[in-house]
Length: 528
Image (cartoon, rainbow, N blue to C red; front, top):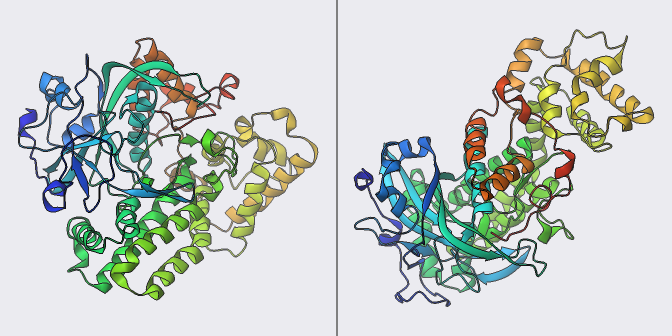
């Protein structure tokens, strides 16, 4: 039964609350959250529930079929002895300080403990809060499907991420202007239950530093260390420094996983950066189709391209600088913070090299590896080349191929399916590919693993199936017409992204041409 959830609320019991309980838009000083109840919906319908997350919370699949489950996770009932709330935070958006932001359409229901783990349950799209500004606090089915599928897909890819428990229709119609072009229309309203150990962000700390509220800042940092970094010990200057160092390390690990699988977050503002190094807030994200370091899916960023794929590690560094500034009042010393940030910056090149070597199946050390990778990234962008298919199929390249006899047949034939315009692979470009494969072959001959061993490992690094933009859009289009079967199909497909799954081979394919310029497939906005 859902009533058997082991509720262990900490955030809204140990941290300072907003004393005003009216749900009106306002500035909220000296508080980490505001109490607020979800909005009741017209006619809720549960569309999908994650069995894994049910189990993680101590629930059974039978529990998910109950009216109580439906009502709680669509905001129509509040769990007994709980007090839902919205979190207060600020943030830098596209490089500029935006002041107070907060949970404008997210409401935290409770925290649950099960098998030694603590999970915060949060409804996205459950109604307005004091932080909603001019918005309605709601979400639409389109964006909710994308968030639900992607958060679980990322987990199974091995990428640090928040999770998703459920996806439901609210039964309400929600007005949205998808492309911000003055053509709003009504869409199906939806609610996702997001799950994470914590939804604290960089901006949760920035807001108090910006307001010079050192007391609340210290209270929040000490709380975070006690519950999420307890191995660091009692609060002190050294503890705060180590706290920052571990956040930096987690953030680097996260973004290198993004680069590995071709994920582009799209809106890497500091209020969208998790203090636990988790991928958080799945808005206008996208997956690389053609390998393009300059690509971003977010139309809001189409001019500046601040958050493009190739710049994501540098943006994480910039965001970490802002977090360092926020923590400085507790440390009072810039030198250790600057050293940690310098080590991150200096280590980016090696982290990228290590990640790319894993994608190429290279283990042994070779001083020419950086050049080999740089040459590959250059040739990949000379003609549109599908990132996922290229790296997955590259594992089929074998050291014992008679390269000198027919380089084109051996090297290019292995990756041919990755080219969007095969007719472009002629002349100098063929020679460039032949040259790269010759160097790659020489490099592989220095490896001690045989072809089978290398392929096996490469296929645990390079996924066969990712949530391509058009795949999510197909599920959205079907759902708009009342067919939710694609959600189930993609959910199950993406639980095994590294497996061959021959029965699902249709999803191991380049983006179809109809999706090249289709809204939702190549262009996305923050309108959700």
